[in-house]
Length: 291
Image 1 (cartoon, one colour):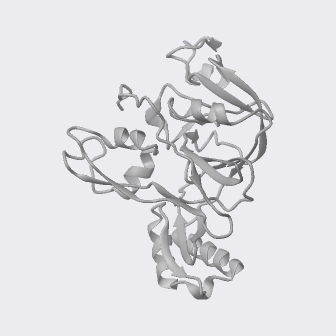
Image 2 (tube, one colour):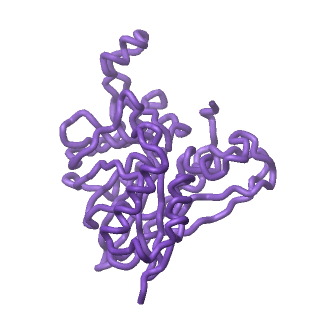
Image 3 (tube, one colour):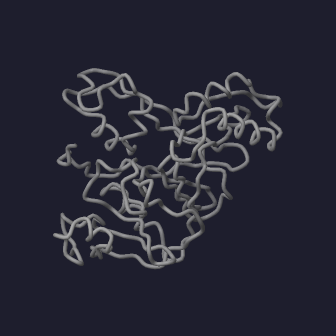
């Protein structure tokens, strides 16, 4: 795996407006044409996406040499998580994306970032947290379990290019977990950490500036999301091989959520099943609300 990918100077993340009652699908799908020997790793990073997000909806492309001029679909639209819309952060594990909700002069805004999360055996914990500390150039205290496997590591790794926490870190309540940068940008959008959430080096300074101490954070597991743009209804489903579900389980969950909203009779059942079967992680229109 290449670790010497050129680094974007600026974050690709942008704030977008939303309305929790009428407009909960933000962004729009885009297409990128491969330039020269670009890899999907580079394209994902340049557009503020995780590696798995891009490879999942472009399965026909070689991730390392997709080919000069090849069209690459970019999953730059998304349904917002089904959580109370208020100031704070939401990390949805199945989509490996962190959302920061805030208001500015009475406008409701959201900005989101792809993240690397905990591995299957060292999962990122679910629950409610707050930011308790903000650290610049943090040192990394190597866990004993890691030193057992890699005894050559020192007890503490100081700031610098070998520090896996990057240049900025936000500590969560409880003390054991952080949101931080990384020296391994290719790991963003994957299960690759000891439980922390890591962002691209160009993204973490943006979140670090915006999120104050005391900011609340919810870590959720929500593979099925339903949203709307005025009367149009959208469904987004992320297959998660670690939750023990098959596509029919996601289908049933989607129909239950639609029924709870009173929308079940206003969507195409076959379309819901198709989205559940594919699990591509992008918003798909499935029906319209009656005016």
